[in-house]
Length: 149
Image (cartoon, rainbow, N blue to C red; front, side, top):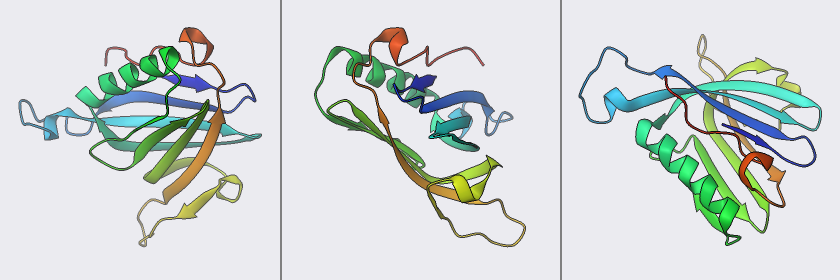
C-alpha cells in the first residue's frame, strides 16, 4: 500500500512475509505479518520493519482507506499491536508509529522519540507525522493495499 499526499509526503507499507512461517493453523501466531515501511517527509526518508499486522488486519485497513475515499467523516483505525495507527480528521491523515524497528535513514532527520534501546538490540522508533490528503479517491491517494505473499 502506498499513500501519497499533495506535498510529496508518502507512506509505503509492504507485506514481506510471516513472522512465524513455520507455524500453521495456530490462531494469531501463524497470522502475524512482517511489514516493511518507507516514509518520505519533507525531504527526509526512513525505513522501518516490524511484525505489526495480522492477515485480517491488512484487509480491514484496505477497507478502512476505501471507506475514507467515499466519506469525509472523521475516524481512526488501530490494530491489536499498537505499533501502527491512523487518524483521519478533515482531510488530514495522522500516522502513528510506536516501537517500530528502525532499518535505514538518518535518525537526526526523523521526527521521533527514541524507544528504549538495549545494547545489541535494534533502535525502536516512536514517531507521529501528518499527511495532507484533501481527497483520498482511488489511485489519487491510495494504491492497492493487498497483494499475494
